[in-house]
Image 1 (cartoon, helix red, strand yellow):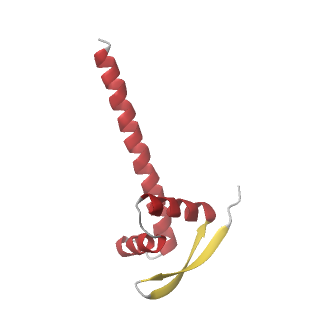
Image 2 (tube, rainbow, N blue to C red):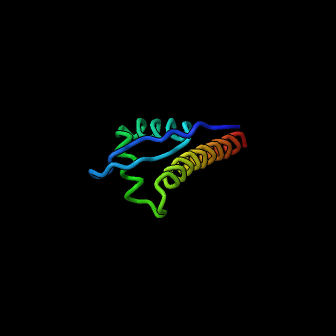
Image 3 (cartoon, rainbow, N blue to C red):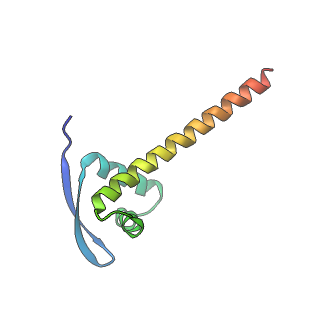
Amino acid sequence: MKYLIIKRSIVIDGHKTSVSLEDEFWKSLRQIAHGRAETLSRLIASIDANRQFANLSSAIRLFVLEFYHDQLQRRMAVALALDASKSISSS
């Protein structure tokens, strides 16, 4: 499966830089920013400020991965809690 890599210029703290990401990561990043009611630039600046890696593109990919991993963990916890409450109420 091939993914289109898109290079975008962004401004972070007054400095212009470019970031290359697969289109799916750009889409996910926009969705996350929208869900948090913040701009894409602000979200990327936050990722940049908190990154532990030299490469911003990698830090963004890891951020997106962690975001969706956390969502999955929360959904699984809710599902387990519902299952537990169903088994208690049916006893």
